[in-house]
Image 1 (cartoon, one colour):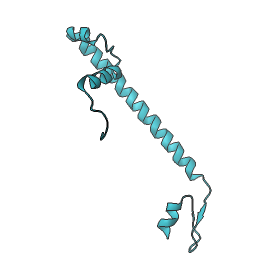
Image 2 (cartoon, helix red, strand yellow):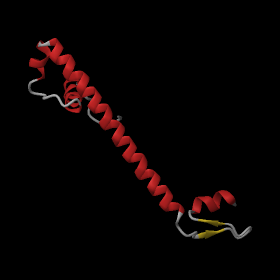
Image 3 (cartoon, one colour):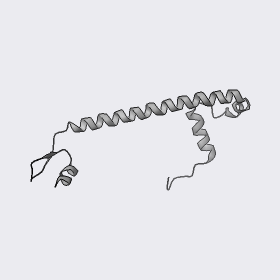
Length: 96
């Protein structure tokens, strides 16, 4: 992002380890045992993907609920030419 601090590799690594539910203080010991490390990475990736998917679904549901509630708003703008009603000013502007 422009204007923000540069991310270092260690910061990105720590964030990824936290997402995968791996302790950032003891991950180096896990790496020594290849099969254990592979197991932790696989299960962590699965759980992180499930969490990401659930968060995206929740966000979509919130947007969907918000847009459906906005449709129930009473019109506050009326076209002087055709009498059509609009809930937001930009709709009226584009109609004119």
